[in-house]
Amino acid sequence: MFRKLGHKILVVALIFLLGLSLGALYKPVRVFLNQQVENTKGFIAGHPLERETSVWQKIQNDLGLAPWRSTRDASNIADFNFQAVTLAPELKGILPESVLELFLDTSAPALKKFAGMLVKTQVDTGRGYSPQLLLIGFDGYLHKLIPLGSENDCDCSSNKALNYFYIAGDPAEIKVLGNSLVNVNSCGAIDWSVDSKYTFHHYLNNDGDHRQASFWILDATDLVRIETGTGRVLDRISLSEIINSNPDLPVFEARLKATKPERWVYGEAEFVPIGRTHTEVENADHNPFHTNDIDEYLGDEAGLFEKGDLVLSFRALNLLLVVRPATRKIVWYAYGLTSRQHDPDFLSSSSIMVYDNNFHNSSSRIVMLHATATAGKEPQFGTRRVNLVDDIGGTKFQQLIEGYQFYIDDNRSLIVSAESYNAGIDTLNDQVFMAIRHQWRNQAFLGLDVERLLTPAEFDDIKNAKCK
Image (cartoon, rainbow, N blue to C red):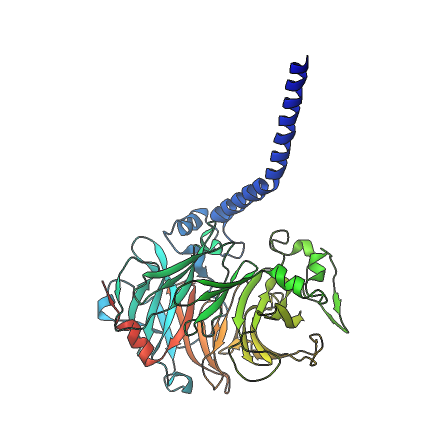
């Protein structure tokens, strides 16, 4: 009798434990399966903003056979006098000469101290399209192709390290789980890589990341500081730490409480940070903030911001904030001055430039925000917005889901990533001095990013690197 009772108790206990285990596994399994479904849908159907509709074309892209997902519509493009980039003799037959096109005003002051530029784009390798770095001289020649993540060896004994960083296996690009931050040398070979704990996202802080001893990158909502030469993680700050270190600031209050207000009120000012309700925001359950970009203040002048401060962009909240890493304290923030913005850059100790995607309007724009605060008090909302650029060569430009910009000299010359090309603008006289695009099949343009302009010494270091 007791033996039978013991068996029954054991069975009940096992069923209870099994139920607990299944309950504990339910959510992670559901999230995992949902992620696989979304990846499969993205693999087959692609992003809703894509212009192409053929399933086969999208599968070709995901398998690396053709760059369909990278193509952009050629709308909103200024009518520059583009010229085909000439290939250096050693590159003949590797890349069609008609693919790269360049407009260049070599008399422009902004170009006087530069010999060329480093550009990232898709290149036909003969085995499908892959992202590569292109060394383009302002002499009109394409001098070098650098395949990212190649197995080529590099004799860099007489050359400086390239220190070019990119995110390998970005789920936003090739729909795989997990990714790494990779540093390559002048031949494209990997010097070091850092695995993501969550998902590395968008750009590194691009003002000095190849010159400084360390730089910052976003790993989902974590702020990660990495040593440039080794890839060693020096610091990791979670968004939870920032929220908990600033309990009196209502920066994330509305989203944390899952409210659905049409208008959020803070202090004495009202802002409309989003034009849709909470549940309509993209990936609201899994990615309610969509932290997309980070930049470090490297200046020494006194002001609201101090050297080492970080500005963060939260796309889903239309929010910018500046945090001090040492204390995790928020020193400034602003809601609703931009819409779905990307790539905030410090301009001074009291101003920030940002790519305002201006999501619900007909064009994007580059704006400068002047931050003000009363000493010893909470961040103020006395921020005014100044439009810098909303057209290139007389034509409006728009980026819906990304975008970047950076100043290149003291004349406040600007590089802007538009929908189908990149352009340099002398903001003193509102004249375009450079524009580059990557044409494909005479109808579409491949995504193309100007990574940085190169001085003659930097240009020669990369050009002359001996690759095996």
